[in-house]
Each structure stands twice: as structure tokens, then as C-alpha cells.
Length: 571
Image 1 (tube, rainbow, N blue to C red):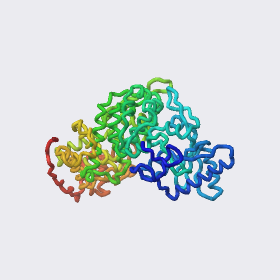
Image 2 (image 1 turned 135 degrees about the vertical axis):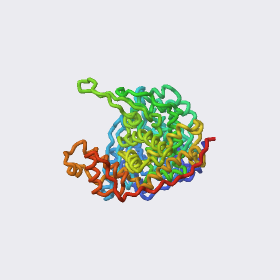
Image 3 (image 1 turned 90 degrees about the vertical axis):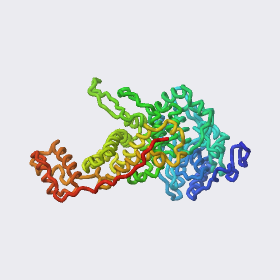
């Protein structure tokens, strides 16, 4: 690395001497105010203890990295060299109160190894930033745990204990210089490279979760991965250490962030390539019996096809309402679960006396999200629904493409209701998107997914006749649903409620009322112009077993417009 230091030490870089690929750190007005307050508090500590070394404050990690990349960050980690975070945060709070400046409550984060909190820290909202206060530290790892013994450390020791070099940079509040104690971080940030401060093997043995963090940051920024990392990840003892040391909660946090990243396809590709797929998506529960999932490469193929679909021109014709980043995250998360489509598990249930009470059939893909990576119940329910509904969509696509005229309004309405049940609701088109890419994933040539999706332009859904035709089948079905005004059928309410039906038929509320309601929903979907009186007549005749009432003025919906699609084969 070239000697571009003009600061107070061999690892300090003034802001006008940074590598040309990086941005100078420009502080916002709020950041300047915050840093001024922190420096005043540090000086106050030094005044109270004149015989001790002055307190030195640095911003550590992500804020420095993001600023050098020209991005703002609302999270600021303050590393303190001579005192712990909580007492310094208390001093900041007292200073803010004295000068009538607003500051949020100081929260102390206790040591919690299960959530990767290895030392006590404090945080508070200051001038709109969430500020963490923590001391510089060194960590010593024991053989069978990723929870280190923590002690005060030097800036170098603190930098070397971090996961990758681009996260090991400091910004010194006093000198206003960037400090790169590993001697690699600035170059790696400038060239787009991921490597560890220490030899990768030792880094991963100490804390195997860093394997997932390497994948996450490489895919988030599109950076290359150092050869030393690639060699270390293949070692079997790293995988064994990963199984022994890492909690499912921490795995879930990293996986979730991967699916939010700029390139979730590459994240899944790396999990497969490093043979970490089964380690990440394992269910730590001996009470679940299941068949093995299908080949994990289908996860990569599904994610690759999904990325192609989201980039394609046909996506706008299939897009759910208010499609957002969270919908995208759920879709890629479900792509990662593609090997579990159709795979059921049997959970053994036990009585209090430890005798077996029953066996419950469960969706294994849903359980991987819920228990394997410990994400929210809502995430698990959405992923589980998309996995389960893929067969429902496939069946309707086949039925409609073979005999569209035989698919009536009632059938299409009930189809939308099945997709739009909890938890998808108005996002029922997500099930259509997932079904489409799953069919492509099962069909496509394996080598196609080895290419970055962005390099395939125009997309396969715009240029490969085989997939253009397949996508058009989905578009035609959705067009027909809109022509019949059924896009909100999932939220359709019948003209009569259960209490009214019970009164009309002179029966007591019970399970039969639900049957009448379901029949009425189906009938109204097939007869959209029926009025309330006709609905009353229908349920009465339903009770008597007579033929159904057909409204006199009910007109058939407009005929479906046929599309001509280009047929062809993938070349």
C-alpha cells in the first residue's frame, strides 16, 4: 500500500489524501454538533482525571465505511479507549440536560451471548442518530464457543478482531482523520474486495458466523472475495465449528439481510458453492420426521429466474399492488426454500407424561423459516403459503391454458380467494410470480444460472420464446381476472352474514352456517348482479335442496380476448 499518510500516525489518513475511488467524509450539521458534544465530554473526563491518559473517541465500523462510499448512515458506533460505554453515555446525557439539548433515554444493553452481545454497551438517540457507546476491546475465543472473553484493547487489537477489513476502519473525532490499523481496509474499500484482518481460517474458527457476514457484505456491495477466505471456508472443521457454536437466531439475522441485499442471487449461489446450504437451513428439532429436500441447486435457479422476472418488461403485467422491498425479500426468501416445495414433515406431539399424543403434518419449508433460521411467524407464514400455493397456481394455469372457456367466474373468484387468504391478502399475485419462476427453475439449463442475471439482457422472459410463451399464460389468466373484476375477490363479502342466514332459515348458529356462507360466496361470484332478495331466495332453496336461483338480469361477462403468443424452443 502506498504511503499516503499525512496524519498523526502510520495508519492515519487526512481526508484529502484518501484513495481517489473513495469519497471524502463530509459531516452533516447534525454530525458536527454531535461530535462537538462528544469531544467536550471527553475533555471534561480528562479535566477530572488529569493524571490519566486523555480520552480518545473514534467512530468505528459501518458509519466510516458508508461515508467513504458516499452514503449516509443513521447508526454511529463510538469507540472509547479508556472507559466503558455506559458511564461515558451518562456523561453525555448530563451534558445535554445541562445545556437543554434533546437526547433520548440511555439504554444499557446487557451481555447476552445468545444475541451476540459479548460486552455491556449503551445507546441513545442523539440529534437524530442512534449512537452506540462501547470501549475498544480485544477478544479471546475458547475452543467450543463463539462467545469470547473481552477486555480493554488498543485500536489495533479492536481492528484486528473485526470480521472484514472494510468494517475495521475508524474516524478519529479529534484529528478528523480516517484510521486504517489493518493497513488493508482503505485499499479493499477502494478496489471492492472482501478479506479478513487476520488469516481467514483463524477468523472463522473463532467465530464461524463471519462466514455468513462475508457472504452478506460481498453480495451487498458486489465485491470480490479474497482467495484466503475461499480456501478457509472449504475446511470441514469450519463447518463443524459453525454447527457447534452458532445459534439459529444469528443465522437468521444474516440470512434475512442477505435476502434484502442488492444481489440475493449471488448470496444463494455462495451458500451452495461453499456447501453451507444444509448448515443454514437445518431444523434443530429431533421431533420432526421428514423426507430429504430436493437438490439445493433449484434454489439458485429459482432465485436467478426471479431476478430475471423482476427485471423483465412482463413484470409490470404481473406486479402485485404496491409491490415493495419487503415483497421482494419474501420472494427471494421463498426461492431459497424451493428445494422444500411439496416436502412435508411429521411433528411428534407429546403429553405431559411424555407419552406421544399425536402426529401433526407440517410444511417443512415453513418450519425452516420459523425454527431453522428463527424469523418471524409472519415471514414463515408467507413463505409457507407461497410454497403451498405453487401447485394451486400450476393447476389453474394448466386448466385455463387448455380450456379457458370452461373456467367460469365462480372458479376464478374462488381461485383468487384461495391465493388471497391470510397471510397474502391483496398481495396474492406473489403466488403467481413464484409459481412462474419455479416452473422456469425446473426447466432451465443449469449453466444458465452460473451467469450473473444482470448480464442476461434482454431477460429470458423477453427474449426466449419458451419462457415468453409461459409468462404470457400467466398474463392472460391475470387479464381475465381483471376483466371479470375479480382482482379483489379475496376481500369479497357475501350479501348476508351468518346471523342473518340463521334468522332467515330458522336454524341455530353452528358449523352449518359456515357451509351456507361458503355456498353463498360461490354463488354470488358466479352471479355478480344478484341482489339481496335473490341471495335470500338462494339460501332458502339451498336449504330445501331445490335448483339455485338465477337472477333474470344477470349478463355474462365479456368474452375473453385471445392473445397470440410466440411458440418456440430454448436455444
